[in-house]
Image (cartoon, rainbow over all chains, first blue to last red; front, side):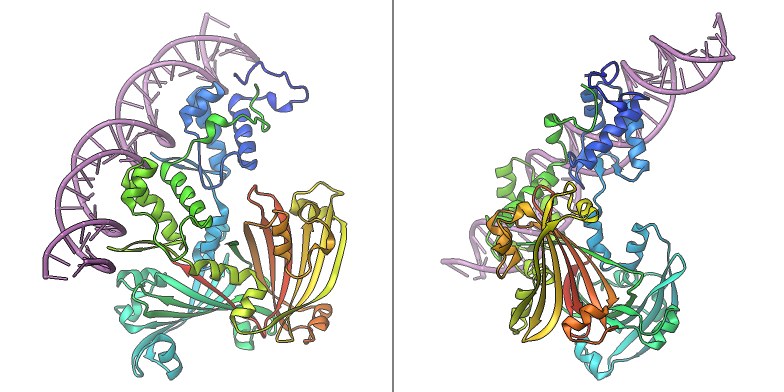
Length: 246
Length: 246
DNA sequence: TCTCTATGTTACCAAATTAGGACCACGGAG
DNA sequence: CTCCGTGGTCCTAATTTGGTAACATAGAGA
């Protein structure tokens, strides 16, 4: 079944042009039509070459186009995969940086606070620490493409970090180094009105809608190591989640 | 045969993909189908390897995926177990009634709208219906202990319901009867200010914070059967979600 | 004729998956 | 306590798959 010389279908405007372009168009249609499952592998190049009766060179050029378009991802030794947007989006709920990057934006941060302190009675309950225990407090303004998007305020049990300057960029990376990276987290989320102070920091109107997210990060042994309050701008940030009904 | 999008004979192609991905899909189906009881153990890795005629390496990789997804939990020396916690967490995010009951509150509803109509051009795109197709529209005020909590506006493809009065209490129960209950859903969530009309219905101040959730329910074959916009009161409703860091 | 481009053919390299096995560490049952 | 089944880890080897290069062929156009 060659692609050339087969214009049997009337109205097939796709049958003109270069072979690899026609092939990539066909593959694009197969992806859009879910012939290849999202997240799954497409047939190997050699199989495609045989199936469409073209050379592997042509297949590679066709696949190259789709890789450049971001529809496919190659993994050396494994296969070529249809990008699965949905699955990644769930992880977005937790990581600001990853989320922004996957949206094609450039994340950045500005430190608002970075201090060592002692737990308040309130925190000692939440973190499960004895009163008088040490904690680190971090606050950052999170931006995307230079536009303020959220304020993150974290409280970390002191045993989880070597010192306060261990956190340079990623909090979780620093926790990872001491083996205290949370393995699961519980998030609580609600809509609020942004207070004057936070509004000033994010350069928006006070009284604008905001999304308050409280996260508690748990270690494998059940201890709470992290408490983070994030305030997201309601007018500029959407959360996406996939769920499975049972 | 030209390579165009309508190339339907992808039989040879379909069995492609990585072994462990196919296996994890099979296991996922077994879990969803209650072949493995929730909370119970799945067969040991060596048994699975023999049963599916793959190596234990492959089994472990397949199980790894499900563990990362939170569907399974490994216990060294004991076995690998189906987690029943996850479904509840996910379901909480989506089902108003269940959520309220689990909080010890009494859920109730008041119908605001219940009509048959035709798709708008906007909806036909979202629902994947041809223009002119029929849809049902439902709108309800959702309350807990008699206190208004949310407004739910649903648009349902007409093929999914026998008639408009099929929905008496639970929308999903009605969809279940025709075999068109969504198997998964994609939710989009953002903070907004409640408009005057919705505020009046929920008996709150206009300009109060609210949580807007757009949900699209997918059938197993990928069709969108349900589109629901829910507006929750920000001052009275918290969303809880558990996530697993990777 | 000569040159350029698209495509085909062949060969080999590099990386990931898969197979199959061995052994250890943990937990439960007796 | 011991025994045994289970997951956790490591190893070697074969297989599959993408990555790359060299060279050949056919057609279009100067």
